[in-house]
Every structure is written in C-alpha cells, then in structure tokens.
Image (cartoon, rainbow over the protein chains, first blue to last red):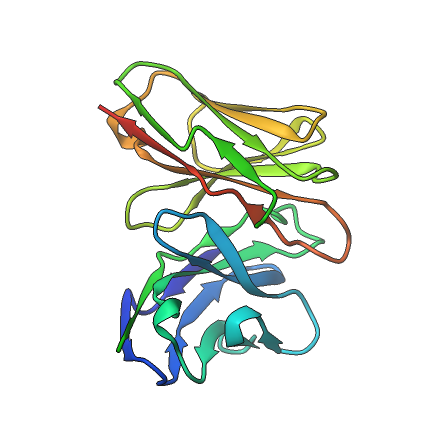
Length: 117
Length: 114
C-alpha cells in the first residue's frame, strides 16, 4: 500500500520570501512522485514530476523538488513566491511502470499556500 | 489548458437519484481515471479505464461505475446517491507509454447531493 503525508495544512508566507512545502510518502514498491497545484474552483495542474534520474526536479513557475529516497520525502521549494502562487498544493505518488499501481495516484491532504503582500 | 473537458460544471441531485458525469480528452489519450475530491481533502482514486476496460479500482462501492468510448470520451455513473457523494469529481487522462506517466486533469464537476 502507498500513502502520502503533507506535513503542513497551511503555510503563510510573505511575497518574495522562500517557501518549502513538505511531503513524505510510504510505499513498498518503486514510485513516481508528483506535485500538483489547484487554484480555486479549478482542476489540478501538474507542477513537476519525478520518474527517475536526477533527484532534483525543476517544474513550472519556478518551483523545484528534491527526491530523497532514504528519507522518503519529496519536498517542494520556491526561492521567491508571488501573490499569484496562492493556491492548494498536492503531493501525489503512484507505482512506477513496473507496478500494477501505475497510473493510480495517491494524494496527500493538501497544503494551502497563502502568500501575503 | 490540458485539453480535457468535463460536463456539466455543476450539478444538484437529491438522495437516491442517479447521475452521469462526462469527460472528453485529447486524441490518443487511451487511459482515463476518475477521482473524487471532498471539500478540504485530496482527490481519491475511484477507478481507471484503459482501452474501454476497467483496469484498476479504488475503495468505492459498485454503485460507482464507468464507461470509456473509442472517441476518447468517458462517463462516470453513480447510482443511489448519498449525501456523502457530494464532492468535486475529476477525470484525468493520459497516453500510456513506457517513459511517461503524466496525467492531465479536467476542471471537474461539482456534485451536490441534497
């Protein structure tokens, strides 16, 4: 079984400050990892994904995440946030291409990023 | 834009009724998954269809069923609606390849059960 824990339900931060949204996962198989963003009354947009290779993954809108297998973490970071980054962020895991769970995304509870002026 | 559309945008039903939600995706996206997102929660996997057959299911009862059509559209059907079925329903589509697993989400259908 797989599970995802997002360690912070809300993260308030001032504009132009750095931010880190924390995500830990558990899985008995190799995984793919994802971060999605959801703006109010919208669907999910993919920010970035880790499938294999380099553990530092760069995504859209200046976000990046680092896969740490030993700590089973996939934290999301941005060096300088904007008001427009205010949204709900979801970390998700799925089994890799050799798994029967590939394509089935398991999501965390979400982290609300509140960027203040 | 993900190229994935869902209809209707909003829907209000009463307990015990049946509902059909629709999803349309890009050409070539042969896999569709449906998710339920309750208010304040992360999405939960309902089931996945590949080449018009169900090939994975989450912890949802049989009154949740689906169909996938050759034209890359799909449906989610829910029978005997319960109050707890009130949620945002998301479909996600992808082209199954060996090297990528990106799913593209639609904007969702907000279902309210009274």
